[in-house]
Length: 238
Image (cartoon, rainbow, N blue to C red; front, side, top):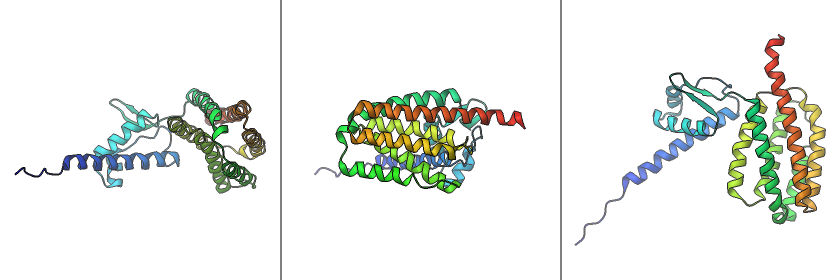
């Protein structure tokens, strides 16, 4: 009689460790995006391991992934730091984002349903609400981000969406660390652009939609780079 095979315990253990590393990665990434860490701040790996109640291994694995994605910098014989905001890198990120959204527009117009158009219109309508304080601004930013995410998802290209998500995360980091009071005056222009995007989408005109998205993103790029320039100049002005 053949002996029964023993369960492959090692395989299950590896999956478990992987899940821990994934969870740690997501928690650190969320902390970076919510501004719990400042650009250039040193990361204390033992302290994070203690906070998450895990060994240092999954934390180091998560840090490695974050470094690959550009969220942190690992400097030999020095330590691990939250990546500093580089205006040139942000400009390049915007250029790639523009290309991705234009690419998504080519198929989004074919995949769009009446219900999805209604949902996107409702999101833009919601962004018409008065934006006065920080909480309202955060809500506005969340709606704006989700609006663009849905447009990209309409392409049906999962890899394109994954790349887009990473790019958007870097832009969000720069945005939250360079906030100025000028955002109030920009909402009206942004909404005019959103209406133009909706119009092109409803007409199912891929070229028109791609151009509307490109103009919208490039305007946002100019504003953010100007904000970053002012932020860098601020200490010298004090």
